[in-house]
Length: 60
Image (cartoon, rainbow, N blue to C red; front, side, top):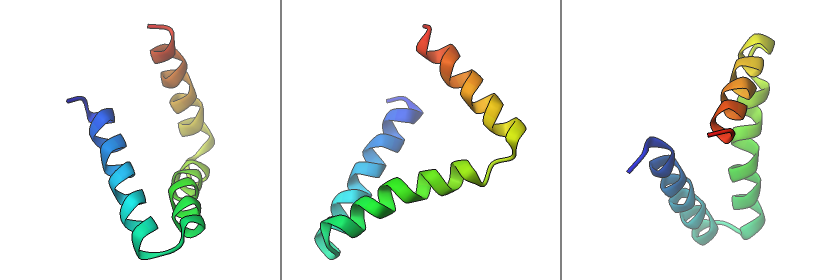
């Protein structure tokens, strides 16, 4: 299993646990908010590099 697949499975598991322990909307806010905040915390050069890598993988 690839690293991305493991991360996706972990994200789904965390989402389900949050949904069970809290309300649906809190789980959605956490699952969307954490990656968004992490992306915004990156330096502008790091964001460019991340976008470049993402485009390169899409072109495979």
